[in-house]
Every structure is written in C-alpha cells, then in structure tokens.
Length: 155
Image (cartoon, rainbow, N blue to C red; front, top):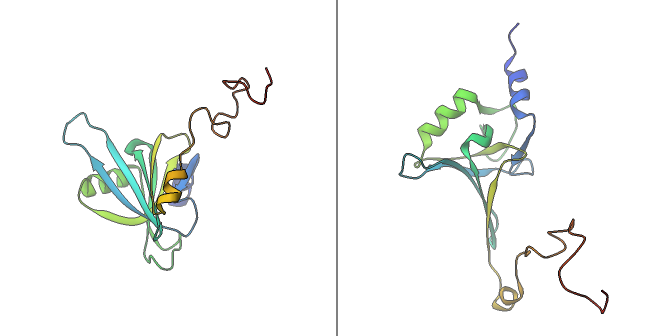
C-alpha cells in the first residue's frame, strides 16, 4: 500500500520545528556551499523583523526536512504552494546553490545545530549596556547548582 502525499509530508514534518517559528511569517531562504569539495552545504533563513532588527539562522542542509514555498507571500496558506521534501528538496537545493533565494518556511530537525546571527539597531548607550548571555549566567546555565564565586557572603 503506498502512502498519499499528505501522509509522506506528515512523516517528513515529524520531529521538526518551523523556521520562522511563527506562522504565517516567511523567511528569505538561500542554499550556500563553500568552494572546497569538503565544505558542507548550508541552508540560511533570513528575516527582517523590524527596521531595527534582523535575524539570520543557518543550518546544515542535511538537517532540513522540508521547504514550503507559498503561492502568495501576502496570503500564506499551507494548502496553496509547493512542498519540497526528499529528492525534490535536494533538487531544489542543488538548483539554487549559491545563487537563488526564495521566500518560504523551513522545517528543520528539532535537535539540529544552528547558528543564530542578529543585527540590532540601538543607541550607543543601549549598545554599551548590552551583552549576550555569557556561559556562567544562571539564565543560560540554570542546571549548574554550583555556580562559581561567592555571593552575599554565603559560602
């Protein structure tokens, strides 16, 4: 018994997260690869969230399970557009490698490694006060029950 396209897609989407994470937002998707044969292929999803904030997420191409390209970028509907998965996704990636871009939604393995890059416009004072979470920040390392140093005279 063969599976319907909807069943195959449901299996491909199992265990994935959508990029961008909020529907019906779209990202500008590019497929990139370095010049060397051994260089891995990447899929990059870029978004301009506001005039002051841009986000770029990069993934290994092997971790991308599906790509959805809607027929309309102003009225996104998952029933109206083209789905790329499996061999069809590989062909699309190869055709667009280092040259094209498309507006769409990626579906990436939940545990995939990613590189998140942000560009934020802010004042000099905001910039001087801003720092990203550091490895010893409790908000990042909240499972570390033995933080370094002593605080408030407690030992």
